[in-house]
Image 1 (cartoon, rainbow, N blue to C red):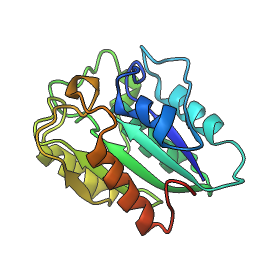
Image 2 (image 1 turned 180 degrees about the horizontal axis):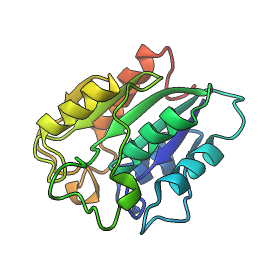
Image 3 (image 1 turned 90 degrees about the vertical axis):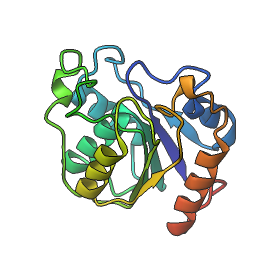
Length: 185
């Protein structure tokens, strides 16, 4: 099994839980490499997801944060791959909120609000400045995935000082178990 990390705007720095998971906890983990980290283009990110998955020779689980969640939802609805067994979506921004930078993300303003074709789970913080729990619930309902809230941890990013994010590790481990997979598989 492989894990594909799909960060948000500007990628995930070395203090981000995605980076610590990729560098040590998750075997066979890699991240997408779009050309447009700073000025995201949805098609470029979709292409990067497709390239990271490559041939469907083993199961893949996508682990997305922030804007990466919307990129994954778009990719799944427009391209997809039989290799993808599930998606772990963390802290997607609310594209309808005043905090959503429409001018910076014009290709992400018309976002997919359709059921995901694979199992998934959406993880949200109770006090995310970019997405209220109600908005996360709206996205979870549209994508037809369960919503799990984690308490007050902000945007669940580097500023949240989560380190390896043990709660997130447990959530991912439980999600994988529901798919009949394990971290070490």
